[in-house]
Structures are given as C-alpha cells and as structure tokens.
Amino acid sequence: MEFFQEIRKEVNIDSLKNLLQISALPDLCFLIEAVISDKGNMGEIYCVWGNFIVSREVIRNGVRFSLLDCPHAFAWTITYHERKNMVVIHCTIDDQDADQEFAESIKDFALSWRDGLNIESLT
Image (tube, rainbow, N blue to C red; front, side):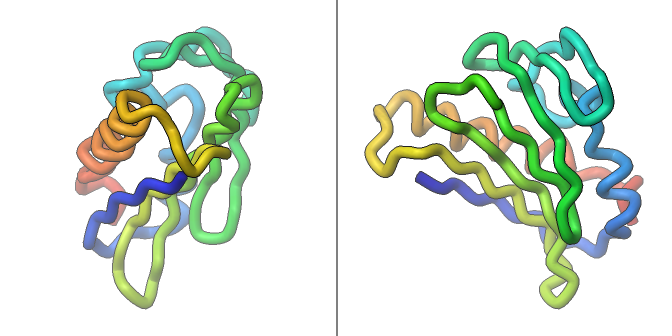
C-alpha cells in the first residue's frame, strides 16, 4: 500500500536533507514521540506503532526512512520534485490490503509529516 501527501512550495534540497535527521523526527512528525537512540543514519524511535529501529538513507532530492524491524516493512520518503516545486511524502508498506485502522494510522502519519514540514526554514 502507498500513501502520499504533497506540499507545494519551493525548497532548497540540501536544507531539506539536513533537516531530515533522526534526531529531528519528533519535531517534524507528532506521531513520532521520541528518539531513543541516534547513531547518525541508524537509531531507535518510539512512534504511534511502538518502538522500532529506524534507518536514514540520503537519496536523490531527499531522504528515505525505514523501520527495519517493522512486520509491515514500513518506509517513508521525503523528496523534492523541482519541476513541480513540490515536497512529496510517500509512505509504503508491504501489503496491498492492510487493516482499515492501520491504513488510517498511516494516512495520519503522512498528514503529520505534511503539517510538520510546512515550515519556512526550507526555502
């Protein structure tokens, strides 16, 4: 399953990548309550679904986060599409037919990212 949110705004890609650090996750998404450990591109977080090991991978025009021990292989990317002047939040799991409550929580997660990233420091 895939879930998307978009923010139409011009963004500096390097600023976006620098902002998207494991240590900043609770400030950017209210459904990530705490960072338990942060070792740069690997850490542990407590979020709406519990404790998970999280990895951070810098990709073209953004960052991908993955919950490495999640039974649903949950991952999300935050990228900037220059042609459209748009930040895209893309969340995925490894199942096309997720439980309705779980699917709603992923939609809320993506919305929380949209709200958290709708800040002026990225221009």
